[in-house]
Image 1 (cartoon, rainbow, N blue to C red):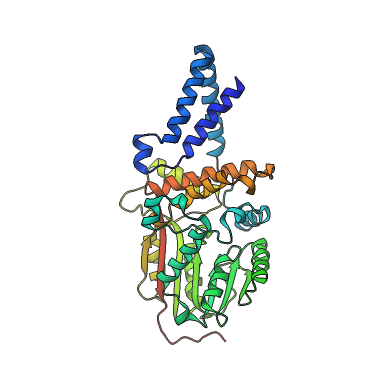
Image 2: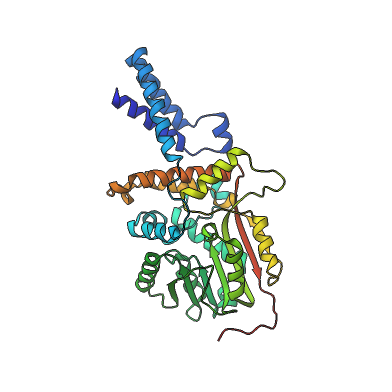
Length: 375
């Protein structure tokens, strides 16, 4: 009985994560889930009606119990929580094993999506994202070979090192993060790779220690989500950017709710997404643009929603763990955390898929005004 219950629960878990298109999830099961359910039905037929009822009841209770646990956010934002969680993620090594040096979503072209996103190398998708973000920001070796670059929320420094290599030895890249473990790992990787023009330091992005007008390029990729004060986050980046300098930012956003208010389900889903991965709150693409415009320092801001180009990353991340469990299989004390992360990845996918979340991209240059430059 117990073995069959586990078997049925496994079917439920696998079929719930099976990748489908939006239309498939509403209209028809995948061939994988159809095969699994057929096997389950054959098993049920063999063991008889009374046992079937008991198994079904146990499966329902077990599934509801597991879902109740997973639906209860475990990493609510609080003072120090961002540094603490990223220290832990860096220390256990699981995130780096699967995501590589870049702790951000990947970029998938329309053709790659049509051919099947799992055919693309998961790590390469992240490098492609950086290249596309450079293009959006007008950043290239021809114009920016000697640029001073700030990477706000640098993680373990993958993008910082990549930019340092792409822009050449005369450029310099500074990465900042709240996590001491990330700084340590980023520095180790820079030394291993011989990247001498990238450095890393622990610093609060809301209270940066740099003088005004310090950097030619300010780059921010998926750090705004963790900022408890979005206005201070934007204002500080605009402050340290030189006149004429380039600003480019990528961040998860919730949809604009001014015309269509959030439903109760929307609010519950957002609350989970805030509190499972230590986010204080999200804002809309439109709100971010308003904040940037309000500084009065920037030229026209380009905004885009890259949901279609990035949404595959959520489920692709789950599948790389399924295909290669070596990143966590020998760390049993991390099993629950990995399950929670996989569950949150799926919920993120669904939130983006139904339009509750958007992937905000922003690019602008700073107005050329008479302001003193940092020495």
